[in-house]
Length: 343
Ligand code: WQD
Image (cartoon, rainbow, N blue to C red; front, side, top):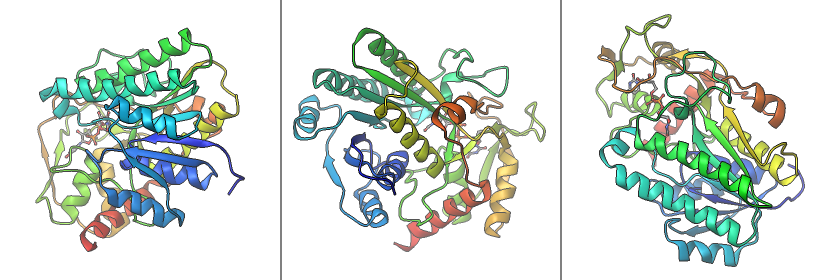
């Protein structure tokens, strides 16, 4: 562990990515102020973080859409950097409820940016997504790969938020931004004390796999095996959530140590390795020594057939590289699912 550094505000810090990042920040010597409104998370994840790091953390139950409540956080705490995770994230739900998504994801974000400016806090790290690339033709995608028009309000909020941050960095002195474009985060902390907490039927592949293995879901549906890929199923870049958490620490280090080369920077956060849906299922079965019932069904509308990251920029500029073994990620994902049923 390194010596004490400064404080980081983590919005949405009780969520899946936020909780793992909070642990990584504390382990790297940062202090944290975590805010969350538990709209898609539980107080138990804060308790999990505290058990892992072995002490209480500074947590406030705050809705980032509530500007005056958020102002209180800026009044009470000194920090130079925010990591803004707080957002809704279900692609399908965003198509059905666009206003809910634009309202929540953009208003909370605007409030964060306005407060950062008003209180002269310079560093904004934004949670973006590989979804901004849409159906790119050339693989792997680099940060220069043109973004495609978004096919969902969720994706649209990510693109808009990137652009808003770019514009703020261009316009304001002492205002810096980094957007991290996450590929497909999976797995859980090796302690199984924190992990993903999907509400209802999971949209994402790995939580659906673990719930099927646990008998909560009867059978996993594989959405299509007739894509133009080696085994016909989609290819994704599955990145362990603890690796992803470390990428945030590297980005915060870069910002707080004045190492940014531009006022606004973008980094892909993935492994650089494509893995197919069918391969992931087989790897999960082998890693955990169990059999997963699955069937092939029709393609899911809107799915991109393949996407994986070129991570050269993050490797070279952030000095960060994904290190976890996929089998370990699939074991930690299963350990977390088992933990959920034992608590
Ligand atoms: C992965 C693959 C599915 C479920 C989305 C968002 C992205 C990010 C992560 C944020 C696809 C297949 C899935 C199932 C399946 N968002 N699949 N059966 O679509 O790559 O990315 O989630 O939080 O912005 O776009 O991830 O996990 O939904 O799907 O066959 O039951 O698994 O078709 O090929 P995706 P995913």
